[in-house]
Image (cartoon, rainbow, N blue to C red):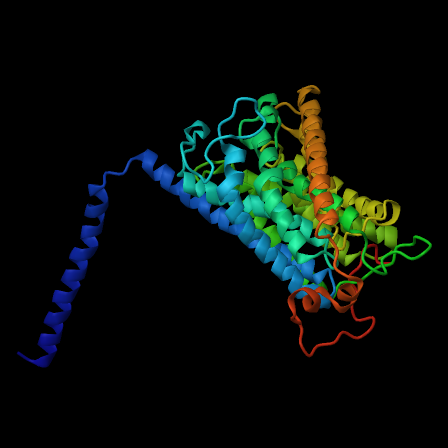
Length: 455
């Protein structure tokens, strides 16, 4: 037999073996006898995990926003805080926070079973494995915790921030989560916060408010006459990258909260999420253009985040048109809120976290009472839902402010919240970590342009 014929025979035999192998795959799959229900569970599980991983990637977004909007000498400290609030928070939420949030209870205040994620959680009625649900909820808890980092940036002790991260992940956030998502008293009243405008963002925002208040402003932020002075961040590019990452991650945050890849509403939820963000950025650009005579870049970036935070509560309950209107309102509110805290209340918030997450989170939650297609005031539902939404916003504000006052007050009175004057002036990278995020690199005076209000 010629070499050509032998080669042809080998190819035929190899091809036949490959064909048999491929044909056997469906047989193996059919042997498992999948059902429509098991397929749906598999799809929902994969969907929940993938969207949860998108939410995890938002940690990188927060890190870039906070790093870009602050000075180069504190970049390493910002990165370290965003890394460790997730790492430490993951451990404590698994051990304690998840049980307080989703454990069984009788009074509707907090869970009392399932610590260490043990025991039964059948009362939740999950259609996905518990571990997938735990992973998804862990990244949400981390989001709430990391919001505070930016508001207290450039002057807070690292150890104090770690202690805060433990307490918010173990207690402050989970209690609110139980009220709304764990079958607690707000859920029983019909309170709507689909993906966490209040549960996640306002909790982080109000904790940031108290933390920034008690730690005090950065050196040089306010003059002796009380006038606010801009302290420019070192990289508008990093800040913008962070916003784009956060916008991307929000497509996991909101659609993923269905916990179901087979839910036909995920497309509409993605649309309402995107429209609110786009409307927020557009309105902030227009508003600052009119107010400051030039469109402000840093505020417009925060305008996109304001729209995202505001729509998160009602993303599944409002129409695309309602989402756009909510986003437009957030785009104006963010500018007014930043100026209010900076110039009137004189609370130093380097990245605008209080305004974006606290104020716009509360605003968006209240707007559900107006724009919800089922029960909203503008859709003939009366004032019942609006009143419920306002009660929820007020209760979460009171709980978070009170517990944060106790937490930060104790830390301040014991180990202290603030680094020394010398450490702050030198930079927290050197003072707290003994490193330089940009070795051999020096900023020239006037090189940084990130500031609020453009003036």
